[in-house]
Amino acid sequence: MSTIEKVDVFVAAPGRNYVTLRITTSDGVTGLGDATLNGRELAVAAYLRDHVAPLLVGRDPARIEDTWQYLYRGAYWRRGPVTMTAIAAVDIALWDIKGKVAGLPVYQLLGGRSRDAVLVYGHASGSDLAELFDDIARFKDAGYQAIRAQTGVPGLAGSYGVRKGLIYEPAATALPEEQPWSTEQYLNFAPRYLREVRERFGFDFHLLHDVHHRLTPIEAARFGKEVEELHLFWMEDPTPAENQESFRLIRQHTTTPIAVGEVLTSIWDVQQLITEQLIDYVRTSVSHSGGITHLRRIFDLAALYQVRSGSHGPTDLSPVSLAAAVHVDTAIPNFGIQEYMAFAPETLEVFRGGASFADGMLHVSEEPGLGVEYDERLAERFPYDPKYLPVARRLDGSVHDW
Ligand code: GCO
Ligand code: MG
Image 1: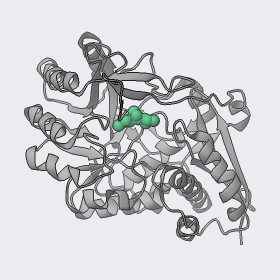
Image 2: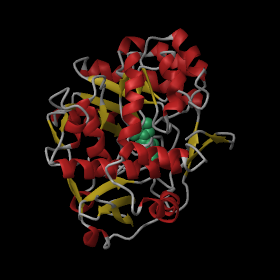
Image 3: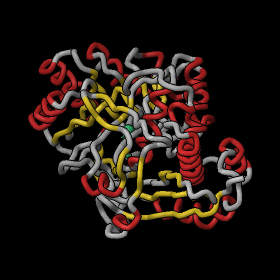
């Protein structure tokens, strides 16, 4: 029997910080997992190196479900982003190995194709409306059929989601940057500029917007109502989702579709949202919610309630995550959309292969396993560079959800 022989954890910053897990079997087959948790990278690296690697050596790499249960139930301390990201990395690496051993791409092991390609949305942004319009035009020219629009709120420096250079990277400073927030100013401005986007570009593309956890339920209800006739594909994270019940209130007031899940890490964190049909899209990611095994379980539950997938896919998840997500997206019946941002050139030199972009869609790799290779030697040239996400403060100085 083949066994797990070696477990390596790589922490490097090719373009940005990534934590990558590589499992090697006694037959010399390798599998990759993404263990990146933005701003808390070393916690997951230590969890894997110190607490998971010793449990994996000698195990049968083919027993993916059993290993998942062993790491989840066996830890006693359940859930949470650090644990679930570590379990996800192991799970993704084991699926990669299983595909390579079988000589099949992972989506074939998940039941085969449900679709030809995967619809993605890109991130258009600008510090003001003129810049946002230019960016939307650029995304449309590049073939995107779905575009997320974010712009600076006048008078508030450093609004969420606005790109500074070519690549959007919110974790940009050695200590957290503090950004001002005013719900009143946002609520007065955001519906107006989204309307201007529709007036300028029409309705022949999907328009998305990320509220990024900033509103209370009643404020989110007002926002959803005001943008109803703009037919957003979704409003994302309108209110923090720790309290799943709050979405009932938003639902009572608006037909604007709701997407939630990027900071949620397990099926239990989205259970009420799904079973009470409080959301339309579940956005849990393959690398923060327990890997392919657990994400598939979440999406299967969602399918029963006509909730579709919309996986989180920013550049703070590595190309290994994106590849794994696209294998799942290709196979499941209730796929909705996949978030996609272009990686930095250095990232693509270190992580080679994976899903490819054309005409607003991602195409799954046909290579056995996930189809991604990691260049460990090249990665050593990009040492870890600690960076934090920003913190938001209301105009009175108190801390707000970022
Ligand atoms: C998204 C997200 C990201 C997060 C980031 C945090 O919808 O893509 O909101 O922009 O802020 O992943 O690390
Ligand atoms: Mg988001």
